[in-house]
Amino acid sequence: MAGTHITAVHDEITHYQLCAVIALGALGAALALRHLLRCRHPD
Image (tube, rainbow, N blue to C red; front, side, top):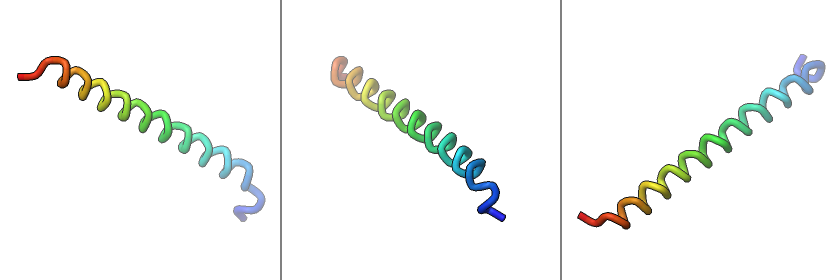
């Protein structure tokens, strides 16, 4: 059954993979920004 829908399955996986990469990139950018802001204003 999966053989007949392999294109649809592949498209779904590609879509979720792209979303995961974007989310990880945004998380990494937020952590880097937080680190830079903390280093700039030591308390």
